[in-house]
Length: 176
Picture 1 (cartoon, helix red, strand yellow):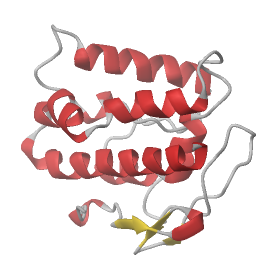
Picture 2 (picture 1 turned 120 degrees about the horizontal axis):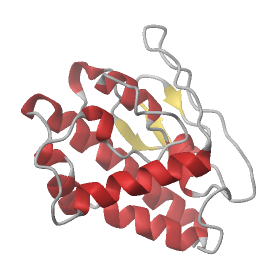
Picture 3 (picture 1 turned 90 degrees about the horizontal axis):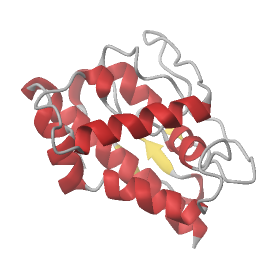
C-alpha cells in the first residue's frame, strides 16, 4: 500500500468490522448502507478545513459528467486536481490541495455517495458498486486520471484511487 507522504493523507489497512483503520487517526466506524445507517468518520485535523456536504443528486451528475469527460475519445491530455471525480458526499471541486481531498475520501463518504438513494434509483447497490469499481480499477484509473496529472501529484492521487477501490470492495463484501 502507498504512503501518502507529506500530503496529510493516511496509510490504510484492513480494520475488521469497522472498515479501514488509519494508522494516524484511529478506526473509521463503518460504512453507509442503503437503509440509511450513517457512521461517523474520524475528525479532520485542525489545519484542514472541514469539507462541506453536498446535494448528492447534483454531486452525482457532476461526478458522472467528469468521468464521461475523462474517458471520452477526445479526453483532455492534462487535468487539474479540481477535475478529479471522487465518489464522496463532500464538495471536492473547490479543494486545492491533496491534503483536503485525502481527508474527504473515507469509507463513510464513499459509502454514503455510492449507496445514496438520491441517485440511480433503478440500479441495485451491488451494480452501483461494480460500476464504481470499474472506474477505480488501477489500470483504468491510471490511464484516465493519474497519467494526466502533474508528476508531483501522481503518487498521492494513485494512492487515493486505491483507497476508493478498497472502500468499494469492502462495500461489495457487505452486499454479498
